[in-house]
Amino acid sequence: MTQLVRSASDAKQVAYAEKVKERREQERRDLVRAQMSSPQGRAFVWGELARLGVHDYEAGPLPIESLAYYTGRRAGGGELAAEVRFHHPDLYHVMMQEAAARGRHEEEAITAAVYGRQKKRDEETTDTDD
Image (cartoon, rainbow, N blue to C red; front, side, top):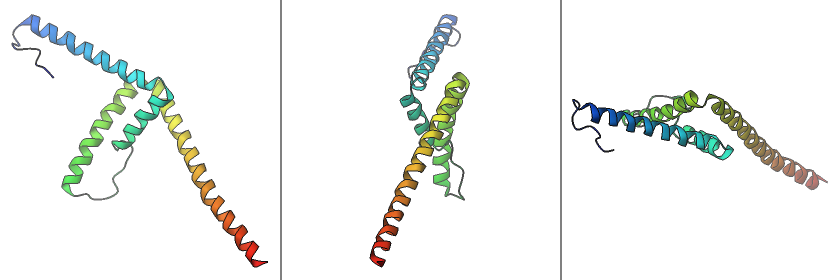
């Protein structure tokens, strides 16, 4: 990012820098809203939060190098989560519901695959018993 203020005592430079900062923040909010406005965008944001470890809990002691890495990664994800919750709380709630529904569908597919194989094995066993 370029330096916008070369002299903090110059009121014009400071005012210009503030306007640029406000414009950039608004652009970011608009980008986040664009992502959150579609199911695909919300799935992407949820996936990023998961990838960044926002919903993870520590499983045990980690080496210091790993701890620093995961803490930094998670902090970045936490900033995105906080931004979405603050500026788009209604869409964050929708995103959580959609993620839960995707999770249920995945569990159902896994269950069907596991029990489908088990049922097939049971049928094969029954057929060979005859």
